[in-house]
Amino acid sequence: MQKRKLSFWEIWNMSFGFLGIQFGFALQNANTSRIFETLGASVEDIPILWIAAPVTGLVVQPIIGYFSDKTWTKLGRRKPYFLLGAILSSICLFLMPNSPTLWIAAGTLWIMDASINISMEPFRAFVGDNLDEHQRTQGFAMQSFFIGFGAVLGSLLPYLFTNIFGISNTAAEGLIPDSVKWSFYVGGIVFISAVLWTVFNSKEYSPEELAAIEAKDKEKEPQRVEVVDKSKNIAKQIRVGLFMLVFGSIITWLIFINGLTKELYILFVGLIIAGLLFISVALLRKQNVRNGYTIIITDMLNMPLAMKQLAWVQFFSWFALFSMWIYTTQAVTGHVFNTLDPKSQAYNDAADWVPVMFAVYNGVAAAVSFLLPVLAKKTNNKITHMLALFAGGLGLISVYFLTDKTGLLLAMVGVGIAWASILSIPYAMLSNSLPSAKMGYYMGVFNFFVVLPQIVAATILGFIVKEFFNNEPVYALIVGGFAMILSGLLTLRVKTKHKIVIDENQN
Image 1 (cartoon, rainbow, N blue to C red):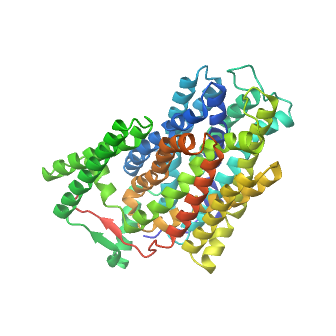
Image 2: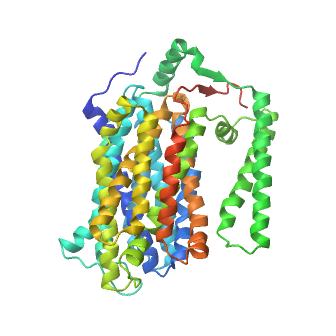
């Protein structure tokens, strides 16, 4: 059995839900710092308030991926998760701009990000499930198009509501402007509508059909399958767990005795917990215990080589993106336009330009999403991704030298090129190394390398900006720019010929 070749419109329908997902995600990214600051957060507090989002994704995505691999209902395999996440996300989009206090806003962000993750990651596995390796790049490019297009619409809404429809972009102290509120309401409607389109206009292969397809692939290319040794795998799991436990404990102790900022505990206490999880699962495996918990943790250790190499690429590129999402509003209002009062008209006019900037980079991403596969055919995926990340890094660094709105939009062109590549090329490079029975799980684990850099950014950027850059957020964008350039260089070491790793007796 082989996967049939899908038409353009079938790929369009199966990707359309990303329009709604990214519409809501863009509203969150462009306006959350503004909401937090309006509700009384200081510049150094904003990163730690954002930490809820990546932590939630770290936990939710591999679990959702694991269960979606094993789900089959009347709606299908992945679609029940699309729909559940869309319903919850839409509710949160209505609630977020009506938060009466800072901590309620932070809690709503937590729930909203978990809900977006429930919808988002099964969409990645959806491409791997439904398309063969020759169409996957096209499938991820289509997702990039909808991500860019949806983000343009979502990012522009507050600006459009103010400048075209005359809805106020200012409000009394502690209240969110009406232009932001109405943007979130529209976002909630678009989110659920777009996901419903995909749910009712796309089909899925059953688990049995996918198993038959993969069995045939193994017969064709048996050399691509690597079966790991259980006893050696358990010993390695214990070593990795002990390293994380010891290293996390040492750094946590150093943070304590030196009285460093408490946000740093999040990262290294998390490392201690991860070490304990690895060790506990290794001990259970020695006793031949097999359950969802042991499989989820063990499969993290058995990631394909390409996935491990791409992890570093993802880490530094998403660190850069997170620094931009957190600090662009403060960098633009404070550094470029020299206004710091959230209640002033000048501040809100400058803050309204940030969603326009984000709309530009997302619009550029939508425009170039189908050009990247063409460039990749003429060169390769690695060169294409490296060049795109270079463009993004230079765009972020250039913000420091800009003094007008037009220049800021030009800086976002480079970021848009990088964004289009980040959303498609790594997934295209990875997907052929994943077994179909664990496509959802490994796509969820791959999200670790989207989430972990965000946790690192949220825990250390506030400290760095305060201690080394005199609370000037524009320097966080410069750090992010150099991180993105580094991620481009790391792309060159990714081995594109990779094996599918299977641990037949992992427990």
